[in-house]
Image (tube, rainbow, N blue to C red; front, side):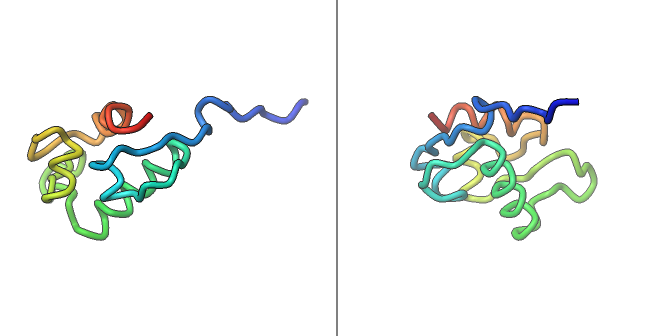
Length: 86
């Protein structure tokens, strides 16, 4: 059985814009690393909603990433990354 191919497009480094760079840094990194860094930031700052763990509460930096929303679902994060990275 051949080894599984990595999806090179998925693993290609993307550059965060200034808003996202405040949370994950400005270096071009793969989307998977951006998601990991966002989750590390969310957990470090205790931003997961206490009652509904699927919702993420925005602090000052994340509200900018969330396009002004105070709370988003964890499933919206991938879409928001796409808007803040090239």
